[in-house]
Image (cartoon, rainbow, N blue to C red; front, side):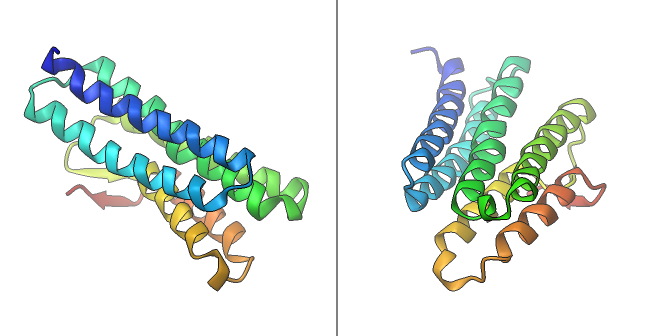
Length: 167
């Protein structure tokens, strides 16, 4: 196998787990859906490192990564939290879930065009999606209002101008 395709294989695996999260959500399997999002986070961390280590970075890989991240950390957490908690708020809950996914898309598009290497502008969608997945895993210990509040806060932070240091 050509070593240049290995990072993209990890990115596609990230996307696969994001889609599986959506499937588990449809089945009402909240915990498995959240675990899939966290698994996507591990794969997302690996694809960029592998691309740099194998000298396989490309514009294609960057775009594929953003598409996978939108599904795994934007759409999947939004639909999961909507199905598990936000639908009890009716249209307001749906608007919160939609805002989270849309703000994630804006954040990714901005990241791709800014090309800043020292820091992120706004919190990364990966962090926002992973935080929501962790909250789902802690669901039994949380007040239900935590979900809409955190989803709105994280949506705002993704599109904010806050600088987050890259590690």
